[in-house]
Structure formats: structure tokens, C-alpha cells
Image 1: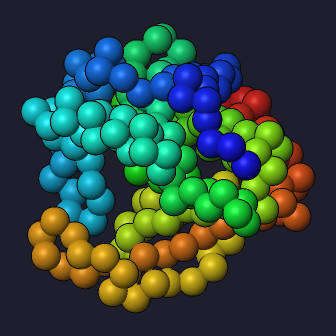
Image 2 (image 1 turned 60 degrees about the vertical axis):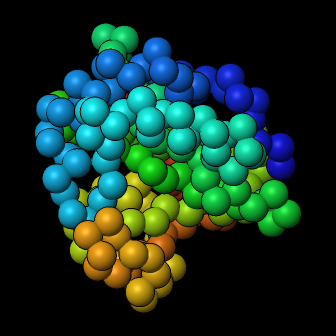
Length: 197
């Protein structure tokens, strides 16, 4: 598996996953401010005043070959969140979809489902990954429900896995979608995206 290219763009009807750049900073700062998500203790969302630094951090990780970051662009052309491929295992091959956040104005619609469909499809079909992981705080029930709605299966809980900004220890819930799972999950996601709302 070769990660990239850096200019990889994935396009659907409801979302475009565009290579993250400082061109997205102003819209992403607005998206972050809309839900004051930086105040959530169990996840990490950049505050509007730290958005440029977070974009630089992710681009630095991209240049080091450990992350492929995207801006999530809605159907109107506005950047409403971020997502990445990360924790890349070139040997197995395997990848994690993570460091994801979406403004509340874009949640609960087809955007997130289609973004995950595009990312899963590319990783499993184009890169040939054997599995794609999702990780979240054990107590982040909203994120866990969203991951489970995709059809990912819980692999387990990593106890005291990492330290949060507030000093607490995070238990990490690890989910995955494997090559064997993908045909049924792909059909399920396509149905979710296309069904009338």
C-alpha cells in the first residue's frame, strides 16, 4: 500500500474530501465555533483561534508520511470539518480513519455517512487494506453510535490508553471493518446515503 497521493480528493454527492490546506482555515474556524466543540472534554477539536496551527500540524504529519488529512466540504462548497487516514501500517496493510470532527450544522445528515463510505471504499478497494480501524473515547457515546451505525465491529477497549488534555486517562474503544465485512457494509452505507429522508 502506498499512502497518497498528497492531493488525493474523494468526491461524493453530499461531501468532497479535499486535501487539507490553510485555504480552509477560516471556514473551519467558523465550523468549530458553531458548536463550541473545543469545550468537549472527551474529544479533541481545535478551537477557532488554534485552527491554523492544527492545519499546520496535520500537514506536517502528512509530509512525514504518517497521516493523510482532508477538509470535509459540504454540497454548498463550505469546509465543515476535518478527517484523516492515520496510524498507517504499510505492511499488513491497515489504516485508521480518525481525528475526525464535523460542525453540528452538518451532523445527522448524509455528509458523515458518505465521507466514511468514500474513505472506507478507497482504503479497502484501492489500497487493498485488510482492515480499517476507528478509535474513540469509551465514553464518547455519540461517536461510538455513529461508528456502530456504519457497521464497524467493536474489537475491544484499550484501558488507560492515552492521557487527555485535562489530565484524565482515556479508555479507547477500537472498532474495525475488514475486507470480509466490506461488501455487506458497502451495500448498507449506499442504502443509507440514497434512502429518502
